Image (cartoon, rainbow, N blue to C red):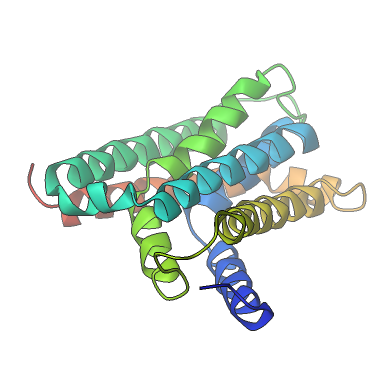
Length: 209
């Protein structure tokens, strides 16, 4: 089974819409862009795209089926992801209430933190794996070529990373920096509440181990 242009466009549009939907990923990448600057925002975006690419690889290789068939493994990932969201939310709230001199960005924070958070917020979301499993099952078969699988994986990772890179670039555009920096503490507070709320929601809905 070979994926034609129509099939590829369908997958690309679905992936783009998924990336565009507001959620914890947007909050995390925007927070790093606003707090640390453009470079950190781009690092977080690219790391998020890397995690998405990894899940896409697992999906096309069939390894995602292992996660879906073992509820304990799936639940462990859910709990880890929920706790990670709460942790990131707490950091945002601390940044919102911490006294600061003016509205300067925290350029001293290591870029590895942005990479960790961008990767973690995607990788610790097992529902992303199930999303790819459901999506690819509509377009892949046992005779799908390795080239087509590679194209799908590259499409998923590229679209995700490109979208969040665009978000980081918009938030750090020279004409917008002053505006967003004035609102940074308020934005940190909103993002913090959002991330903690999402984390608690996941913990509440996750099945018992």
